[in-house]
Amino acid sequence: MTKGSINLYSHGQQALIDLSEHHERVDVYDNPVDAYLDAMGTDASKETMGNVLRSVARIFGFEDPREVPWRLLNEQAVIKMLATLRGKKLSQHTVALYLAAVRGVARRAWRMKLITGETYEAIKEIKPKGERRLANGRAVPPKELSALLRVCRDDKRMQGTRDAAMIWVLYGGGLRRSELVALDLGNMRERDQALLVRGKGSKERLVYLGDEAWGALRAWINEVRGNEPGPIFTRIRREDGLTMDRLSPKGVYYMLEQRCMEAGLDPARPHDMRRSFISHLLEHGEDIATVQVMAGHSSVTTTQRYDKRGDARKKIAANKLTLGKIASE
Image 1 (cartoon, rainbow, N blue to C red):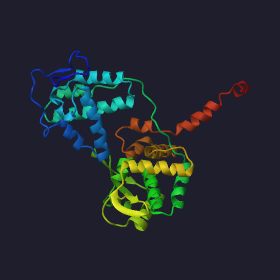
Image 2: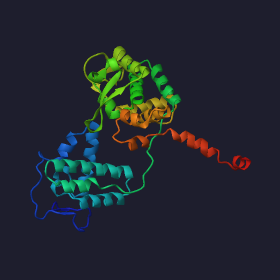
Image 3: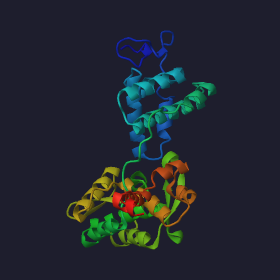
Image 4: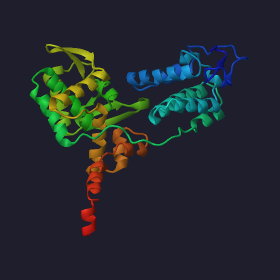
């Protein structure tokens, strides 16, 4: 395929955007892709959306998203992109992620006066079609959380103290793993037992921790890490080699995987701790609007998707539907 058109199809069908009269290339140093990615709250988010935009660029017939002439983007191009993605049988979540990336770049393109406000509004109104799927993952029951913390406590190496603190902060604060590893010592608010967290879209929120979670975090800092400025959660090499290198999001994932194996539990992901945080707060009577703010969600609808508290009740209710019990009533 030549770079004379943006085409969603591979055999010369009708082009999405005709570039036959547009030979100029969007300058790489004045590009909405760079503006969009630079606004990402964390390096992990930047990497994820960068990969998504590279896939979007390939759909449009380019190798690099910075080569896409975003000034020619329009509503029809985005609709056909979604049709192509659905033809690949991708999950609704993945399709929504692609659409979010394109919307984000479109917003930057509009602010840079590359596209009109009318074009941006039309793109913003596009909704992914398809059935809504249940959120993946699970809420980790309190007994399993206790088992995880027990194996950390029984581990007398530095890793035991660090991992207990990470599990407590993930669960007790409802943090995303990218937010967890981005924490620096300067983000701690000692008087309030709170952490200043930068979430998606660079939005900041103050996350308050209970006594147990704060105690575990303090134990890691006071007994092992020390008060040197830098990342709160750092890598530990074999043979108890403490470093000041920031732990990666993959490191958090691997840590929890290993601790679940040691405790003899089904796998739990870092995001399951966030689901547990939300579900357990709701289960204890906290109103959903407050939980939404605590979790850093922009919408109550998103918080509702994390609510796993009804699963156990549904199972109990389903077991009541036996012919013997129904006949005796």
